[in-house]
Image (cartoon, rainbow, N blue to C red; front, side, top):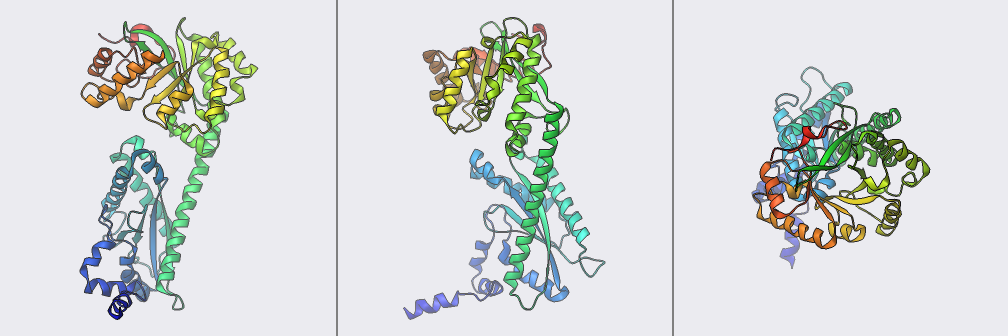
Length: 452
């Protein structure tokens, strides 16, 4: 018992600096302080360097790069993809070392398996102290270069799921404070600044999105749906786009910021108004597929007189409109959601579940909504001609659709082989870049009919 107490007492450290003495005596401890994913040291291993700089120069400057909204990556893709993101962030920091960062700067992780990186900067070459403006400028350059590096190496859909912001702080030597407290407060200040950067960025994006909505700067493109039995066009999906060439051109960016900024209903109304106005020129007999966010399904405008007037102006009746409910966003209250859908069905609208197989609670969504149309997500269509699992899943969906009287649409068809496999399996309807990319309303049939 006395020996056990002695061992425990030997491993009680007065400070993080004593950790290095323990590591010298027990080298096997060192690997516990390196992140296994990135190979970088963690904060405790920075203390000797920070102490030396404070003793020599009276100050040391830190940068903190904080990966925000990282939980979305794990939620959607899993921890392995998150680890790969952190590995690529680490690689991007290594790539700018020797350029925007100096070779003598030390890059570490705040903690093992965390989402923040720490950079201990070398002393300035030409001045006694680091100027605040220079530190701010360096923070912005590092932030921009890391983002550029990640945008060039990561899939666009994954890159848009998170952000990274850099904050900075200069620690001043204080003999009345423990080193651990100085470092802790310095890291807190740098992380707080990175959070302020995120908040300011979000406010600026919200302001720009609000301006887009107020000016009505949303365009409508259309994408045809085909009957795969004879390649006739059965209808068009209306797709909303922001200003061409800008950050908000893609709909996923538009609606992501709209959700973050509580502007979903306003954006949804504008997109719906633009799509229905475009439908004034839709060819006779064709259906119009309108994307509806789950949060907007309870919008009173869907049921009021103005909506009816819009349809009248476009000379299109509700029975030619299919409301596509995306499955990528969780439906919180299925009871209220289902009641609203039944009201809309009574008015003549049909309902489709979009992105089936890629979102939240697929089976529950099908059971609760009971759609007339079911659109299978591109993730199950891609490679269906070579992947037996996808082929069997698609076959099961065909059987389900036939038994339940649901019209099945395969989204995202991009190759002749995928198309031929889907036809062989028995999928009735299809949509994808193999036929055409989204275009302005409304193309001539000859311009979008595939070569058979």
